[in-house]
Length: 298
Ligand code: CP
Image (cartoon, rainbow, N blue to C red):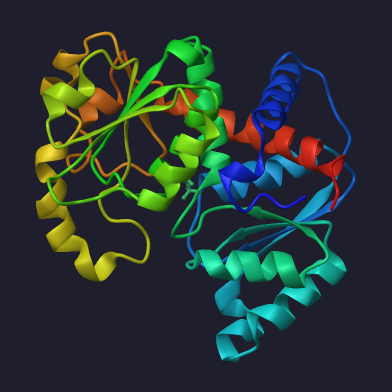
């Protein structure tokens, strides 16, 4: 199977991945002696290294390819490149600008493809996010408030995973800045109890939240709009005034953080931050995901 969207995994699949992750955390070791190619068009610190370490811990191996060093930068097509990657690899973790390209990669490659971030989704991040939340709150009764860029790929994948567990989601962002309606429709189809509130009011959206989540205001590929986006989202910074509305909420961020922009340092480093645990869980979840998909081939 490929993991192109968080919705490629059923609730049952996600629970299995979480169970494997719990076993890994308790010291159980698994073997997946396979080859993982990381094919990245954009920079990465966490996703890249967590996959590299995960496959090494499983007894497999990996190679990181910066796409700009390949013949794709000289015009070789994504279709031909994907065929070649599939000839040499069992898994491809790909970070691509356009979501349609990851679909093409899955179509043309014989390897199992894992979306490691596109403009539309970041499924492995959402798995790590919800796995982290599970330790603090029964998911079915949990509420996550996503503040800032509510159309971000992280928000999209988070909605898809959270909806499967029946979590409440509040999306808090500027008036007339809309989340992805296609993703919301899928999330609503996932679970009739999925409860979503879209608001420009921080007070309304954050109230009663168990988790407050933010992400960068300027995602990779949006650099030309940087100044406009920073101005647009500035009122939606995660800071001490926001946290006062939900005083026991845990603070989450997928990282990298832009201190003083979407989040202030006191909150990122504060007592309620579970950001570093969230980052550590990317390793455990990616290892669990590789174990899971290795026994769920196409
Ligand atoms: N959260 C995340 O995907 O981090 P990287 O961009 O460092 O991989």
